[in-house]
Image (cartoon, rainbow, N blue to C red; front, side, top):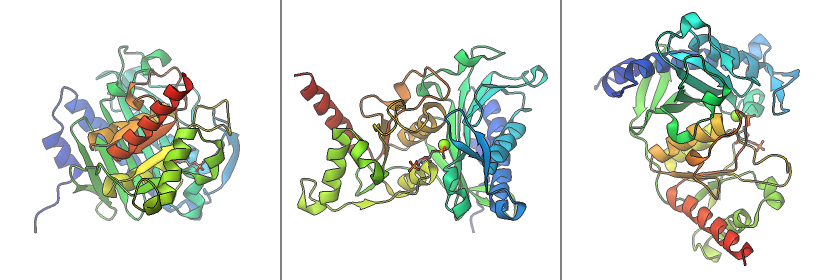
Length: 338
Ligand code: AHM
Ligand code: MG
């Protein structure tokens, strides 16, 4: 039997870049955090941590006990490597400073959503952790150092706490997935060089928002629903887990398109998902796997952030479907300019 490659061996052999030492150290710490988070989630019902708290995060969302527990695990595991100079989290309003004695080896920034899909956690459906690594121009980073486009990401990844715990990441040279052997406490390479098929017959969107969407998205979904009887001339399947990590992972494994488009339900919010710790890292991964990712009118990775928690419409996955969505947005814009 061929010996499986574990994460340490993979990092030692395959992460070759000017950032390799830093990435090897940081990805080791991230993997450790994700193992601890998996345990916290798995035992959450036993330790009494499945409920909601009285607090809200900066987006006005009620926080779950596990939102805070997983945030603290992630910060603790990543603050002493010497490479991470500051962090930012979905659960914390401002940037998280790292003590000066731990800012000696590099100026990296770690941006993360510690528990994505947390509305699913107490019903035992898959959740995840999403992370993005940037480089700061400044050894004592301030908010402005974080506001870089997604193209500046050095590494991005997610952990999926599903039927198995997986760690999937890119350092800009393709996408690789590792599965946790919980008994051995090791991640092993199980999904090398993940690729997203250009075509698909599966879409993922929260259909209950249909009436709040813009016309191009309604048109796209209408055509999927008409299936073989409409202009697409093929039937589509639909999935909605309400965990972006599970959704994107499914797309990496068997193709598909995932959307959280602009809607008018909450007019003050430009979509639901957050650019810096949800859309950007997932877009980097999707593009590295041969897929595409857009807001409908702009490549996500090219969007200049103006705030840590800013929201963005998201459509990502199989390239030909995302390009069709972009074309429908373009047609709509052209019609409106007449
Ligand atoms: P969260 O970070 O607060 O969990 O919100 C993000 C999640 C995504 O994982 C998922 O795609 C979406 O919210 C689901 O939203 P909805 O409940 O509107 O379907
Ligand atoms: Mg989230």
